[in-house]
Image 1 (spheres, rainbow, N blue to C red):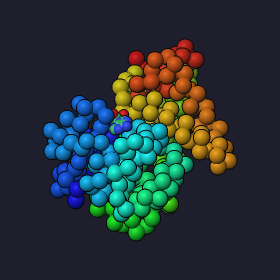
Image 2 (image 1 turned 30 degrees about the vertical axis):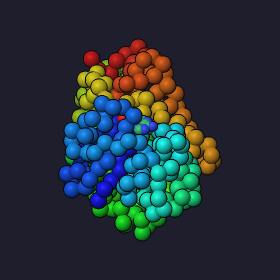
Image 3 (image 1 turned 90 degrees about the vertical axis):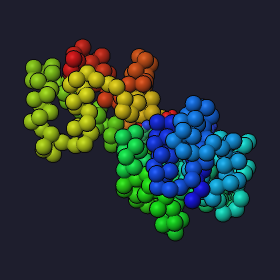
Image 4 (image 1 turned 180 degrees about the vertical axis):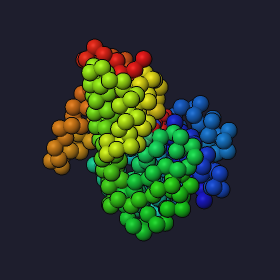
Length: 294
Ligand code: NAD
């Protein structure tokens, strides 16, 4: 199938490669010329803009930073809806606010465009090997129709509810990951201050109830003092802002998320926004005067 793909960053580039590998034709676009050139070198055709891509492809995928970017690419001048014919399918795989997904879907409906929100987790490594977890919101029949395309990029593809449910699920994921990393940093800082080796604590508890994928991935980074991303603090700030905004709109208490968000904001102000989110260890080093690792 001819698939339009807009947003060729860390995630978009390898996702395009996997669509090409599966035999699809990809017409790609990014405002950064270098990113577009990379996708063309990989086998994609360069699109002129989102409107032109929507006019020639029956399915368009977007993989952009946040809600305002997706709204602009879909709803503004030279955007998807400008070029779309009725029957077009839009799959937004960006992590954005669920309420923005619903707003975009309403605008799509007016032009006869069907939409799924389908954010992902797994980061660049799983985007490269095509094993992302994809959390989908939208109509069940459309989900089934698009599953073969999503399967080129993901290993787990779950329909979570109506449009917006994919991004609500993604926010839950991001809240749980952030809270886990924060308490891990707090606990390993306690161990260090109490004179117990953080590495020994990690080895002793990782097989028990406290053990987790987050602990296995992030404790070694904290102990090494290696905060190379991975997943950048600035992206996590974006996701937690979307979670707080959604929580406030629907009346869900966001006590822990708000605290971790403030920690991330402090790290951002300290110039650490491009560090991995395990850099929460640096926040605890700052307030405790004691580093977990090197
Ligand atoms: P990125 O910043 O690397 O890529 C975004 C791309 O969108 C860039 O190439 C940018 O030039 C392009 N873009 C921005 N505005 C545009 C416009 N108006 N028209 C065309 N292109 C435009 O981001 P990423 O890491 O690839 O993440 C994309 C989405 O996936 C985000 O919502 C992010 O939260 C989510 N995500 C990222 C990861 C990760 O580990 N990086 C993991 C899971 C989910």
